[in-house]
Image 1 (cartoon, helix red, strand yellow):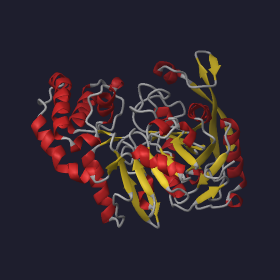
Image 2 (tube, one colour):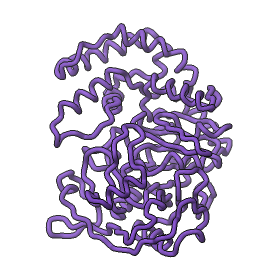
Image 3 (cartoon, one colour):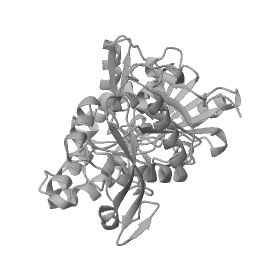
Image 4 (cartoon, helix red, strand yellow):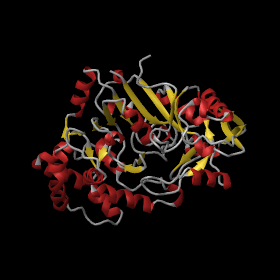
Length: 432
């Protein structure tokens, strides 16, 4: 088999939805392995836009099995809402098309309450920038071994026991934040009401994936967010609540690391970030605002404007190292069209010295100053290019310089939101 993992090599929003969708026609199975519906993927196919949060990007491709792995935390109401929205868009999903890991943990309304209350109570400098969708509290209950899992929806007795445990934990938290006492009976009724619809998609995902691997099927592992939001390797504490690195593809689906044959790291031709946290190359000027306008940089989930800045080769190189990236997919190259000059961060100054990696603490990350290399821009359009020869010479030089600085070759370059506007240099599914 061939197993390709797609991860973001920045702070998320790199265009994983399009690239995963583009690659999925080469795959037999597409599997999400972490995160929740705090992730947003936008697909533009034949002029029609699909916005996905929880569902794998492969659902818009007919004849593919889409898997939501055990590493994902699942809001059951969001799941059913997305399935219904896809049907209204002409994409019908059945149990033959979508498989939900029965061991995945659920996001409950209590988690969303807690998420929003904590963020609201945090001081201005303490806000993380969470989407307030309950992702963090759901992962807390998972590692605290008190979560309700998909399989529990089929066992009313287990549900009663787990709700008792949850109340013992959540009641004092809610009281401390001024929230109403948790109503276990109401939550149980709500869960049992959606249980038949959710369980229709549930099954032993690890087993199905294992069988697929043994049959030599191609598996595409889809990550959410970006490596610099990884709870261990990102800009902590301004991170997500799960592991984003490629190694999580194995843990979050139940397939061993031997199933991974190629790791594709996605990076924009510039840098963006949503929410709070350090951003060394951020541009608080007309150039930054211009990137945001041309790139339509608004969060798929929150609608918040993304912060924009120059390409940070130091950060991307670090993300590639901790995630074992084999090659890059460079997106939104066309957003740089018409710029007189471009800057690339090649190092940082910190406390009078120079470093070639992003330091571990938030305080040090906030103090680093980027060291820039300047390159000429290009006036010709790259939008819609599907061949290397279609690119202006300076655009080619820019891509080649990014490859040198990051230390990874470009496998793909995306030149518009449209599905087919991709320059392919190396098919990740091809064996070496």
